[in-house]
Length: 416
Image: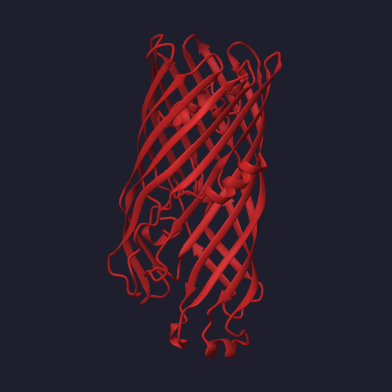
């Protein structure tokens, strides 16, 4: 588990393939159908992130492991920026994102569960001399979650679940400061982390044979990141005036809020072979009003505030799976992720948010009584996103983000 947590913290800051900061990669099998029906799942431990109640129907100790490879291409196209510099080039880095889920039945419908995954994050990697270098060059925000939970089957048709969200948040950022009038740009590098606590609740109901409903809730999490800040390459004239020299170190704090969200899902068995599924999710991104970094020493920068003014967003997914035979199960699905950032002046270079449409396929192969192998592929289309960020009324960047991402997922499910 320690190795998995370290790997997640190093690699999981994937660029926005869900709304806002969300990262949705908790299930290889679920991704094959666009995560449709995850909130109502009763046979897949990888649904713990969406609803801890569904695991109450798992009757044997079960381990699920997944690995997700993120690739793609997203570029910033300049539409009249007044700050000189390059266009961005591709800002996505190929990323590996693992997840782990485990369910242990105690007896009498009571199960203990554990899930680990990257739940939120963003990572952008621009050219060091691009037009938006004063707003960000490299930015990485990752939230890694350990989710212990308990699920209990009240009857053959009803189960409840609850869990504790233990989230580790880490931020790394690098940008330049506009001090070229003194000879050259100053460079700023920041790094810090914090731990946040939240909770999750869920219920699953099977009103009649072949139909399952699920409702899941995830609470807010708040982090106060302690950042080590390093200013370097300060022009000698400016450094002498401020008394800092060409470099100095500072300490800063940044408050980061992750929103609450509600998921509702349904699974409907059509025939012995075909099951259709759907999910609807609401996320309260309106809590993201601004991000303010406060520096303690501050001879060069004392406070930096980025106005966010995000809006609540919805996600809709529809999919299904078909049992071809005793060995093979095929899946497909689609999803629509509504953007959280609606106004171009509120979009940031670290998160060029936009609407997304998912196209998803997947399959499972039952190797033997205990082992199942899963695979999924998602192609995510980004709606064209316009952005403006200003240093002043005459100094700003203006452009359009275009691109896509691909998510290739491989995993296994082992029943002991």
